Image (tube, rainbow, N blue to C red; front, side, top):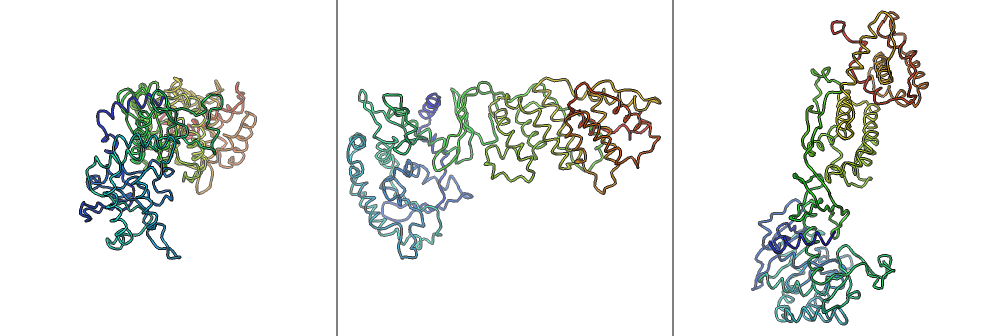
Length: 578
């Protein structure tokens, strides 16, 4: 899979060259200084998270990329105080230049001298064996290090480095001080090769030479040493996980660098097909049909690839998803509360994503796709639980076109969200919107019966029955549970508390059997019977029908009870509308 991705990257890299990487390159926080050939400071640039001007940074972007270490385990300076890789650049943390309580600095003249000594004669670092072979090969191609130029740079650094913060009035903090010596980019490229080639493999100990081609273990996203023997494949003659050629490992490094830049730009969803690579932010997805590979990446100390998957058929368009007023909202036309849910057809997956995020999760889902549980700041613990349970399924659907996880969990979990809204005394309109959206999505995912028509039929049937002079009977389980919801809604409305709460329905929803359900309805009747006129025909008919009906399914239908509870109450319905 990675090889297929690399082939696409290779084609793009051959077309655009290093610009493919550097066009999106982000400089680290710190102070950047460019020194001209006469030793004068030509340019000083301050870079922060909130302040990165690509045009102003143009002098530094390419040479910064060419001067960075592969990682901190492969430095030129063995004491890891200097973080650059060639004589034309000198990177230190500013705190390495400040004097501590003992009157000492992390950066010393000895460290500086040792840094430039290795750059003047890299064989000091690559003393023997396969590392030396790699260095000698590249040395034969690009020539020996330019000792005179190296000495010139070393002298400038030793004469200026310890006074430069004060001289330029640079703020002392924990960011970088990066000094670059101005010259042709080709010289930076040459010295970059001098560093990269001997260090690009995880360890040269694993390198093998076959037909004059060197194969080794890549360094990117792979750690293998005496402390990690479990990464070895003990059943093979060569126990190393996999080996690739120098050409492949260089290409893979470029690819990882490219991905790291995208991660720095907050683009963590990577889509790769045969023609192109598209990088999207965490809550974004392609706006056209897609088949290919998906990578989810993250910026860490180095690039982290958290997921690698194949997308068989992603389609950003939706067919036949209609949001209807399963429970009418006409009672809220004059309400000051604005509708969050817009009714009608939804044609794009990203539109549905935004609707679900707003209506079900109060805007909290998309920003917490991959947030650590401890870092999710949501007061409602139940909502937080639903985000944690739902987010992978929704991500698979919205960003990969795979709805299988959501299909298996949505019916149950979405009902839990609605029940939680009742428990937390959410506004009734908000709960109805959740119910209506849930019905639309279930209809789309499962192709089930249109809930709106079903509820209207039940509602109309009950209207006729409760207005009859003689008590009628309930026809089926759906009508029964809807009637229970209607009755409970009426009884709760009689509560004399200053604030009527939806949570009063919780005991009804918690019933797991019909016997328990009838007992709870009876309890509520006893509690509020003092306020019910004995000649209330509608109530008497509805109550009598519920008491006398024995449902075929002894397990309570929570969905239909909630629908009856949320629907406009028939007992309060004006006579003119009959």
